[in-house]
Amino acid sequence: MSLVWMEAMLPLGIIAGMLCVMGNAQYYIHKAAHGRPKHIGNDMWDVAMERRDKKLIEQATAPSHN
Image (cartoon, rainbow, N blue to C red; front, top):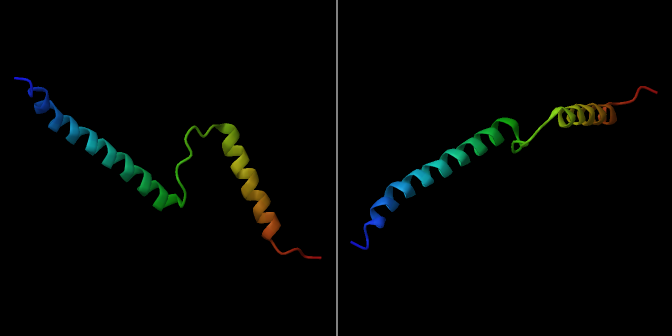
């Protein structure tokens, strides 16, 4: 009677394992599609800074016509 709790461990282990598999699948699919891990908590300021950085990098790498 003392090992009854072990009956519940197998289903809980399967559920926890599948949650880990699903989370890792989302991470690797997003990383493969976008080339970098997903930014958690990306707000309007972060989006504006990413656009600014991208614009500055494009300007810096563009050939100058002097």
